Length: 369
Image (cartoon, rainbow, N blue to C red):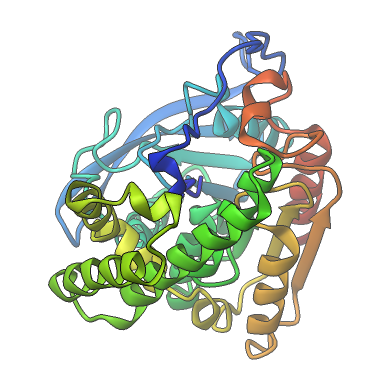
């Protein structure tokens, strides 16, 4: 899932996931005995020479089913795409549903998470695309259980960009589904999610506007500067200049050298720098396999209209005749039916992944394979 980042407001306002009134009932999680085959697998990222571990689920009594590889969003996540503070395991639920309906699924722990080797810290979106392609390469060797010409990707949130990168350069990928995936660059994703989240928290408009001005300035520095040292120097100068420009601003009054150092440390994180600099449109424009994009209208982390329009514009150059782009009314970032879409709602909603959304995914795949 795309990380919620607030460039400055976080220093004087706590922005945390609410754990009170959390629902513990998760009716969609599968319970043994399961009506399909489960195989624990591992495969090699040959580029960096480490093993990734995952779970392969296969429909019973079905020869050569199509298979989907699930790609998680940002932050270290296990094969179930589990965020413990939300008490949901979306990939466990999605893989169970698809496999029960004739679609094999491979889901795997992120590098450095669970049983997977490698190092998560400092890995970028492009590195995670290498991991996804390693999963494809592994499945190409499994002619004993699947149709190796029907291997596809399903990426959630940042997984949408990861899947786009992999699909744009790998002709072995037979289909790609982006779920709540970005269609614009990282700067725009972070600015819009911050604004929407703060609006839901009833933060005064002038404070939101000022925070956005500062955030935009910092993200623009990241996009323009060539390396972390240049970004650090320009960011420090930016803050000091703004303090002089707005000497009475209460937010800037709290920005001292220590806070600036914290901001520089955050903004020069390798993953974040890469994310802000990455524009997914060139990758979407090169996707030639069947492609489906789904985003929820109440998603406050990857705003649906902005990002679906970005994907749609990019695909005009792809000459891809099998493209479907849908906004799902009332769905949040996790594809739950939500009231506001706020992060605080995630844990309170019992449904992990709406069956209405999963039916769309299942029908789209089975119509083609």
